Image 1 (cartoon, helix red, strand yellow):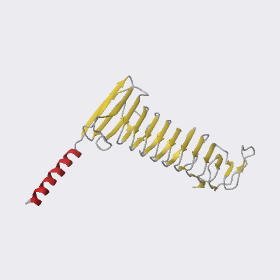
Image 2 (cartoon, one colour):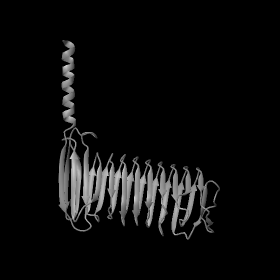
Image 3 (cartoon, one colour):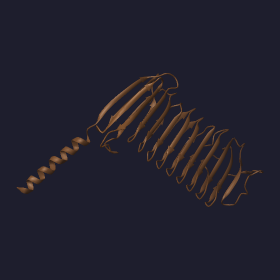
Image 4 (spheres, helix red, strand yellow):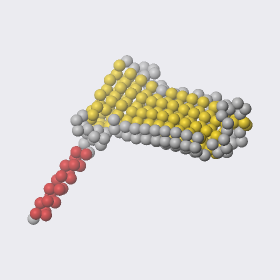
Length: 282
């Protein structure tokens, strides 16, 4: 009899926990804005996904996991801002909010989440993504300034055309696929940087890491002017380069090189303190 009573009590507790865990609320916000609007989403915990809308509307759908978090929203002129407001007793689990955001394609968008993931696609306004451990993805974007700041989360950019791209990471891996523009700059402390593309035409590409490896995989017919330097790591190059006559350093075999491929359409700098550098033919 004692055993049965204990089992019954445990069952009641489990059922109660399930009811609390599944409590969630869905909210929707709509705003009409003019050209070049500004949209900011500040989410402490949970994903934010941004896609283009039809016309001049900003539509935000938010799913709140519990009553430990609420959403503050404001619209001043063509500036829209929503942020997750934590309440007493909030934690990364129960204060999670999932945002799905539709914005005019030309809107300037800034999104933040501690653990994400963060995702933006098919836009051509300025983009800013910030996170700690959040996975961050940007793809199919053109004519945009793209700024990404990460601590440990991985960053992936795909099909970015005519972009002004600046990425800063502490230890997360950064992967660039078909990313080109007037400026593409990546700075990392410990994370690996990988570039897969052709370095575009007439751009400036700076891939810099303190201890992380740098790998650039490009077509055999790519045109670029390159300098690659590693103070204590290995440097490898698959391309027959025309030597540069006025380098600011003396090339050291296995540690640094500089030269020109084709018509030197773009300027490329690959630099790391102790990581490895690989310039590979695709």
